[in-house]
Image (cartoon, rainbow, N blue to C red; front, side, top):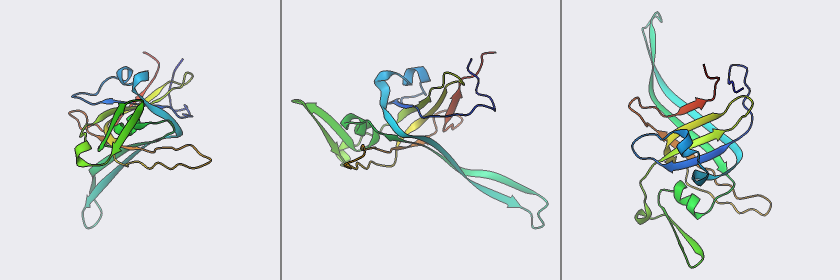
Amino acid sequence: MAKRDKKTITLGSGKIYLVDFSDTMPEVDTICQDDNLLGYIKGGAALEYTQETYEEKDDLGYVSKIITTSEEALLKCGLLTWNGDTLTKLIDRCKTTTAAGKRTTKIGGAGNAQGGYYAICFFHEDKVDGNLWIVIKGRNTAGATLTFAPEEGTVVEPEFKALPHDEAGTLVQLIEEVPAT
């Protein structure tokens, strides 16, 4: 039975899915469909949450208060499998067309800007200890580097910056499979 308690060790990578974001965050079952698979991951994935704080205190150190002044969340991964359609989802100023048996991807240029955002879900499957999902609204802010090396696969490494996606300003949903009560 799935659990995810304080003794659970999370091992392994997962899959990353992506769909256009409209008004509300879709459910993970809607995002995590085969047609929405962005690509297969090499090197794992990482969720990075950072915050800046400010501390106010009296001169003698008797009272103090710490508040968060800003925060940021990034979801990073390495995509081993990709194509021009994948790049269109990773690069805002990118457009892909297919004709006469060829896919042409144009990168850069204000005329190719899409301006949209995505609902992105990293899915870590664990049949023993319980599945885990990380869901954000955002888009890639890292651009793309395509290195064609003779002895390694070409891995594209997007960094999806999370944006608020609900009335509370939530950046990240971490969903865990736990025993039903």
